[in-house]
Structure formats: structure tokens, C-alpha cells
Length: 212
Image (cartoon, rainbow, N blue to C red; front, side):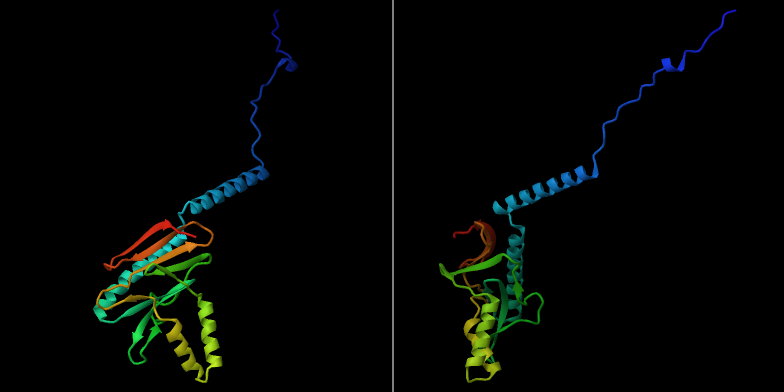
């Protein structure tokens, strides 16, 4: 009688596929950090090459506001002035009763705007650069005038404001615009965005090299 026997168990060999080990959490974190560093370096390189989105945004915003102010100035038949500080700018109106320029602070669009940290204004009139002061420097001058003058504090501040805060750029009700060149730039870089008010009353905004 033939008897069929089953192969012994130890002769059977089971082959299991080999899967590569996955990344550990530490390895993933290292990769993420490296990607972040590369992204930061790329961003800085873009800024060094002149594409500073923050400067561009500020320059184009001011260009748009000046254009709107020109329209309103003609419609309302009133003269508006733009006063440039090294770290910001503000719009002013001429008060015929006081015979002086007064800051417009009741209009959110025209109220003083401070530039983001690291940015600064440079202004040229008739081909000559104007030495600009910061807002804090002008405020200190006003306080000094109020404490050293025989006038009342209110009158002293008003007088000082009239002397030191006369708008450099006029936006007249006739539609005329004072010729000027305003550069907005980031400290330590070689590029800037600038607004150019031309003698024909046109206004342009563009990126340009900024001489140091």
C-alpha cells in the first residue's frame, strides 16, 4: 500500500518581502528646517535683487492716494499739501483763517502714515535732496518751542508747526502738482521705488537704482 507523506515543516520556506524603513520624526523635522532655511535665503536674495514687495506696496499706495487727492482738490476747490517725513508722510490743508497749514487728521485715508520699520523716504526738489526729519524729531522740536517760548504752549506748538511743517509738495485746486522726486527705500539696499512728479503735472511710480 502506497502511503503519501506530507513534506516536513522544516523543509518549507516562507519568503517575506523586505520594506525599507520609513523616516523617523527627527529626520522629518530636519528636512522641514532645511526647507525653511532655503526658502528664507531665496526670499532675501529676491529682496537684494530689488523686488522688495513692502517698498513697492508703500510707493504704489501713496501714488494712488495722491491721484485721488488731486481729483478731490479740483472738485472741492481747495489746496492740499503733502508733508514728507523720513519715516512717514501726512497731508495738510491750508487754513485761511490761521494763514497756516494744518494737518488733516479726521480722514483715515489722508491721516499720517508711518512707514514700516527699515523703510525710509528721501526727497528731491529742483534737483536737490531735502534733509528730512523723523516724526519724533519734529515732535521734540515742537515741545522744545513750547517750553522755551514766552507764548502759551498751544501757540508755541502752532508757530513751530507752521515753521517746520510746511508741505514740500503742493496739490493745488487748479490741478497743478509741485515737481518732485520721492524715493522709498530699505536701509542698506541698492534699490528703491520712487514717485516722480513731473513739470507737466504727470505722476509716475517705478523701481530704480538708488544712489548712496
